Amino acid sequence: MKKTFRLAAIGMLFLLICADGLAQERTRVHIGDDVLVETGEEVGSAVSIGGDVRVYGSVRNRVVSVGGSVFLGPEALVDGDVTTIGGMVVKQEGAVVTGDINTYDTSRITSFFKRPQPSGWKDDREMPFMPGMFPFLGFLALALIVVALLPDRIDLISSTIRYHTGKSFLWGIIGTLLIFPVALVLVISLVGIILIPLEILVAAIAFFLGSVAMARIIGEKIITTIRKSGSPMVIETLVGSVVLWATGLIPLVGWMVISAAAVMGFGGFIASFIHGRHYHGKAGRAL
Image (tube, rainbow, N blue to C red; front, top):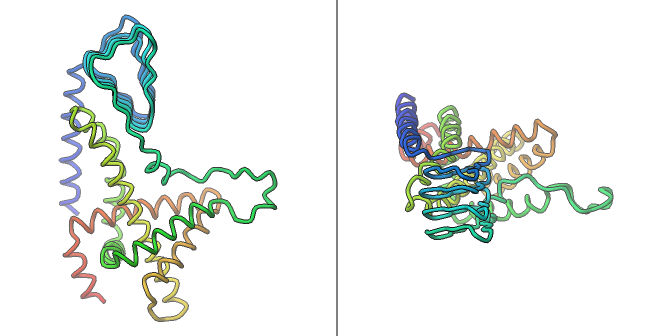
């Protein structure tokens, strides 16, 4: 546990040092909000994570928007690159960009985490499926394929969560909180910007594998309670996935349970890489 907090403290210290460097450069950084550079104003860099960047003045270095778009007014001057991840660049006539304009489409990755949208059916009584059925079926199909191809990895993550629940949840919280700060650190360097889509992809895979492991654990407990005996991992994952999906349909409570399961699974994935062999060995002796 002390090692976990030590690593977290080092990571936060690194972020503070980077933040201090950004402040000295007069970089304007907003998280979850838009960045506005007004006419006649000059800043070092303009960075927004989860918002848009609107430039009507001058930016000496770079303009970056993660999860938003960049709008350049007719008098905008950017003496560097303009980069958007998950958005677009709108450049009005007269705007000047001396560097490159880069756009990265991450819609296929980020859509995995979005809540199901209401259907287009006018009458819910005519719906052949319950809300969220199609995304769930896609998750279930992919989960069963992963369990069949990577049973050892799923078993390792499951064992880590089962026998080290507290540490897995703690790692999940730390990992989730560091996703956007890590993206901010990558934004600091021109080379690091192109690594942000990779970070999003890795996080998506980690959340997915962790969710599969959580579904397996839930299914295993349910089947063991009913039959008093084990079942194939594929069956356990199938049962657990159905239970998680059904729980998610409960207003408010379902969202909280799904979120907690996702964070726990994410933390189990991280812990399985950091302490994987040690945890797996203890789990095997416990069995």
